[in-house]
Image (cartoon, rainbow, N blue to C red; front, side, top):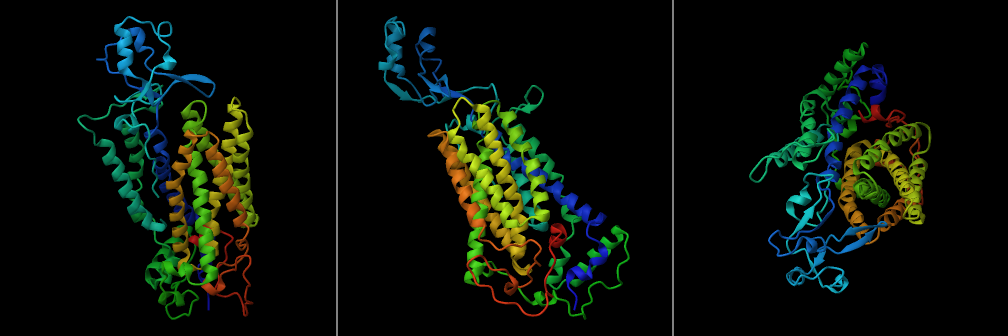
Length: 482
């Protein structure tokens, strides 16, 4: 009786075939990054104030005093949501009164922006906000595994193309700032979407997982893929890799079907699933909350967004290095403590220390991004083969719920600049402690059945008898997934 890893060991762990698939899968994810974070620019809120109609009977002097001023981050700026009562100003202007000398403006009644808003075009030529003439706009995010990802991505890309080219009355003009930034939101959306169309042919290039095909009883298809992999790796494969007459350890799975309720089939599995759902959701809130809040940081929005994206590169590298040798739950909890801790520390930084605040935000995103990237590996190692993809899919869906909630954390900044960081930091540290309750998966064999799953802290583990057959090795994450 042989398991999958033993049968396919002749392929090697990291040959040309594995590298080829890894490269294609990695390339297919890049356009998703464009679209998931594009809302930062597409729905950017430029500096704005109440519109004063050109038909208003006001002198040029009074037009300069139609908008009350307020202090914001140490500087005086126009109010965004109110103006002085236009009828009163018109009366003052008609009488020839001088603002500030003849009229105390602090005693003039205020009114909302009855005629809409005027938006600055210093940063954006147009955004979704400026078109719909709204002060606030609900941010959104979209959120599977293997080849099932491509139909969803294709629909998303086509939807974005349709959204970009549809316009009331005329098409968008391409205008660049300094030759680098596309300032019209429709042209920006089109430019970010088109690369995703290039990934459509990958549906016919990337093969299905042989391990999954075997679990579904499709031995012939799995055989063909392994034979092609052997040819690409320039190794000699057996004439028959998966013998239908040989009782392999994956064979019992052919008769089983996994259902979403299997993730809650016992109290132990249910608690682990609920903890996993909460872990993914709260980490996602921190990740997307910090990403979407980038334009609200002090300084140039493009530079801040670049820094926010660039900090993810070392975060992924560090996560990869940590995953190779250190216990999963400790490194995930540690990065969550780092990310959440520095976010809580921001409230102690004086308002004028902008660079220190930005540095702490970037350090916080570094920690949360590292933890986020390790969740895929950790969750996959906790669940048995039958529901492994389902568990990762369910928890990933939970993270999408977190990404939907995240903008509301950002909006809290309108009431208190520090409040979003306090909430995100607190939740991140809290879920870091919860992570310590998970079982450790480093160096452990991947479970094939529910009985082989490890117990979370506080649950009594039953003693296992016999050998470790029926389990997969997990040192190389990509190979086990494939």
